[in-house]
Amino acid sequence: MRWILTLVLLGGAVGSAAAQPADSIVATGPLLMGCRSLVENDPDGNQMGMGACAGAVRAAVDISREIRRSCPEGYVGVLEAARVVINFVDEKPERKSEHFGPLAMTAIGYRWPCR
Image (tube, rainbow, N blue to C red; front, top):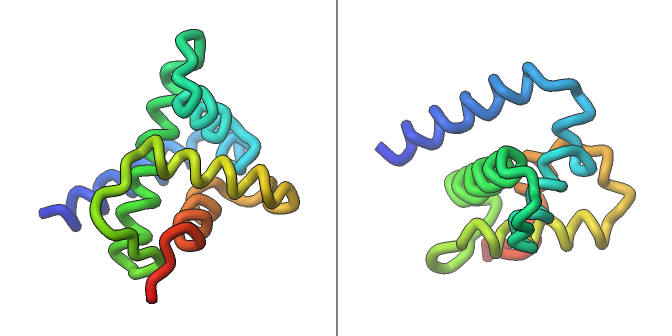
């Protein structure tokens, strides 16, 4: 059941991403801005962007774990994972032009590698 839910969420994310301009799904686009607002608990932040970040990061964590790209022990919260993605992008500015999903999965894999 969890696998089906993950596929449905991924399908929805891909469908909505396809409807957006290409620059909106790169790491420097609205998803990362939404993540920053989410992590900072910005009361004036874009609520839609914060929700999109939460969904994208949660999907990245779940998919990374499922395909064994990352192996965190226990539950990883959305805020913790969003911080990991933000820090990764800030530390590697040359990767800011990459798409958010694969970049988030890479960041999560670096933080919680499989042994």
